[in-house]
Length: 222
Ligand SMILES: CC(C)(COP(=O)(O)OP(=O)(O)OC[C@H]1O[C@@H](n2cnc3c(N)ncnc32)[C@H](O)[C@@H]1OP(=O)(O)O)[C@@H](O)C(=O)NCCC(=O)NCCS
Image (cartoon, rainbow, N blue to C red; front, side, top):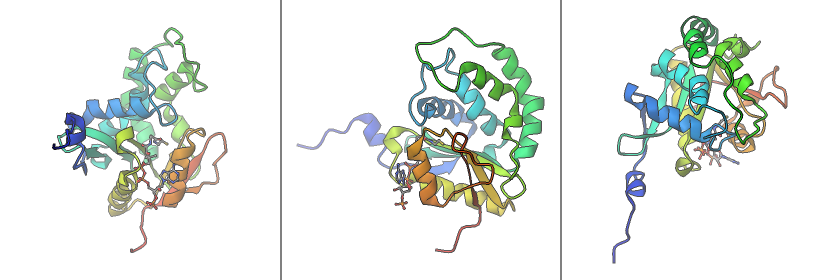
């Protein structure tokens, strides 16, 4: 008897990396939410599930869609992404001008408490969404770009994370950007092992409670 393959499993048989399209926006927001709690599902952690994507995903695909790449599950649906900006300082200026006003009007104050008690509180999240100065690190000269990468659980551990980072590094190198950095949740030890394996190094401003890693965009010839 032939094996019965469920529709999602069948659709995931040939995932591939492609450039982001504007119709991926809702998928990107969903992936962000489903991976935003130290790499796990953040649904219901805050009073409004749109908050995490509005801080950590949607500004990126709005500002620099050309530096966003997704893993397509083979049916057109995005199941993972890497998103980035080439020039963090310019992004900070854009964010203040174009993102902060709308964000603050949509989210003027923290909503009701949830049953979760995240250490990164909803007030912290609202501050992160309204004040992009948190992104101005000392190493922007050498590492002007920064990134976020998230894959749905069914796609993890299959080499797509490595390939997405390679795709982004190449795209940044083509644009003359020397280095890319990231900040991350210190509790996400699995992601830290991934970055270490890929060759990211701690930057001078790195702190154990506030990890800051970077890598050159040029890749050694294999
Ligand atoms: C972290 C993440 C992006 C990694 O992507 P991935 O596709 O699972 O990782 P890959 O399969 O490409 O792994 C690449 C390399 O890292 C290694 N690696 C990945 N995760 C690892 C872990 N937890 N421990 C040790 N090594 C690990 C792999 O063994 C692999 O090594 P190799 O290429 O030399 O064989 C992905 O798992 C993810 O999205 N997790 C949830 C969201 C998240 O945490 N995002 C990061 C927020 S900072």
